[in-house]
Image 1 (cartoon, rainbow, N blue to C red):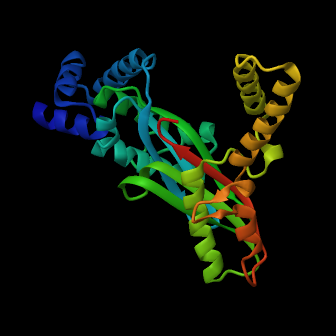
Image 2 (image 1 turned 135 degrees about the vertical axis):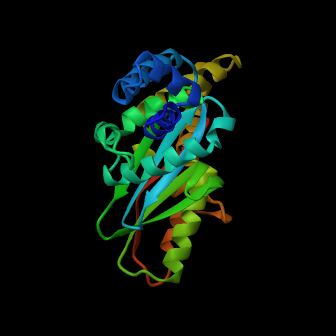
Length: 283
């Protein structure tokens, strides 16, 4: 095998650049196996140096079917890389594996991709090749029996990859056009309104406490008495809960009605919203 053929072989098996492959073959005296090991060590070193940097760009990918659907966020440093073909191919394949793993990150990382190399090792190689920090971010799988999932993706880059993704899960005993229409509209509503929870009592307590502190601080600076501050703060926090609970939000398609009202008015269908997830890059 000529040196050029060895470089080509090494590039195909590792994804490394021509220059790095040539140097690794030189260091290993032409031994392909040792050259691959050298590239892997160098790739890990390069990746480690980049992990202290910020990675606030990236994409969201959704995979699965109506009964089991998964969403995953993969971050990078620049929007330019978020549109890179190698990056997108990696994201799409990892998204499919993530659905099989039901969003178990530990299981996902050790799962093998089409090239018979694990997700974790392919990630290291991709970082070394592209030159940016790349990380796996938020992920979730919604898999409920007797329910179906509806998705919405905004700012689609390619196929199932976008900048914002939503999965909305509804339970129903009667799938018809009204149910399908509601499911699609619900996922769009969640994308636009960004609810924090299904109901007010399910909003994370830490989020409520943080909001209460901000409201109290704002009111105290206004010079109002403690009694008035307390009354106003109760009203404001209740409004915050209402605005950020899916069931009590104004329905985007008909703002004079709440989501709960739209749900209750659906004819010939017993529908219950079971779960939802919304992931947007940059939030």
